[in-house]
Image (tube, rainbow, N blue to C red; front, side):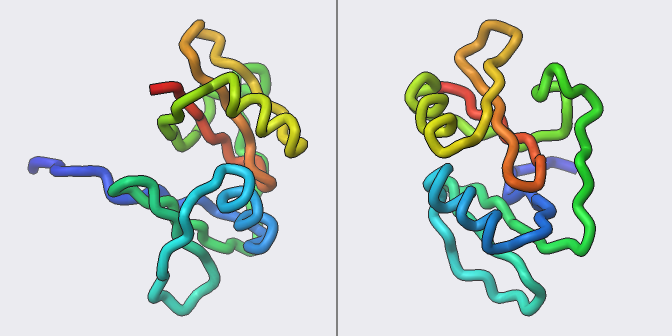
Length: 120
């Protein structure tokens, strides 16, 4: 088997409207057409997508509350980690800087899903 590229990550959300506000307005991702019938939304990042899937139950899945990066997460590349931190905090989303010293931070979406934002 030879894996050729990464296509998408599926993220479970309980409230699609609230999740779309976070992914589209707070993170600034581009929403794209989604031909499926069940509730959800797709966002494009280069040639990669994030698929929001509405689930009746989305539990807090943190196994390490002190270091968000040691939990399940989706990682995205950003241009300016300091600006991202300021924007997220201004929007009311707490962030956690990477404990490794990298120029990276972690934020949780409204359902508690961890998103890593690493300066590239």
